[in-house]
Length: 283
Image 1 (cartoon, rainbow, N blue to C red):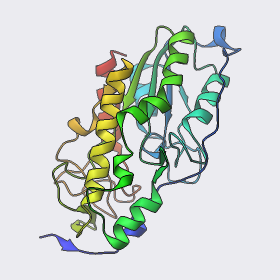
Image 2 (image 1 turned 90 degrees about the horizontal axis):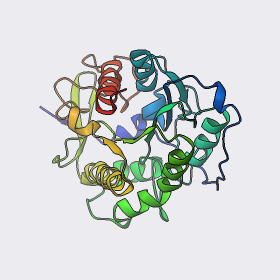
Image 3 (image 1 turned 30 degrees about the vertical axis):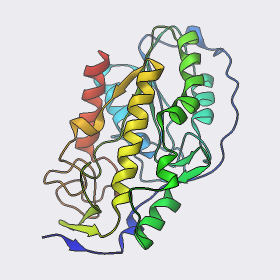
Image 4 (image 1 turned 180 degrees about the vertical axis):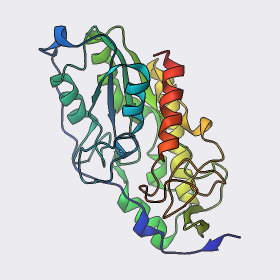
């Protein structure tokens, strides 16, 4: 039986800061990069580090598991709290770092991007402020914030980096990595597992709608850009926060990682992501 609570705010984490313009140029160390470089630009779902304040990366994150699985050189610039726009760390900042570290060369095999849950979509902000409002006051599935999350906006943010990659890393497979299932797409309310018990937040259908809108924007945006989309929601279906065998962590949930970061992938979840990406892109 699902217990209902309004105290979920404490376990939801996101970040915000500012979008900066980026002008990329060829990496000076292009000849030094070995064959099979994988570049990752992303947020805390990519970094998956206990330090949610910056750019440290967890030892079992999917990028690290993917590099180990494929034997590739990894240029992982993911940062917790990063977003497409309006964050302390953005896709622009991460792309600059990846360039400086020799990520975009003829030897690059894949460039992977995972963004959407933080920062601005147009003039509307998602992230901790939106989530807090939903949890404290409730939220419906129709709002101006949700309406701003569109494939066109996603394409606007991501296209410069797709174009840059195609020019300087012409052999690379480019992919948008979706988010794993957190809430079942047809659920009515937000829910998280606390100490082994599902806890729902009544009147928070906007949280489900948020994940659905981001999924659609990423997937359709990738199609319009002519790049791959890794459908993490599909491969983790039924195994979200309140699933019977979750691949994302709740709060002290023994069915996932007991002390894992709430609302982020478990070690098993990241393992599945790494194998899915490797298989989908033939890395």
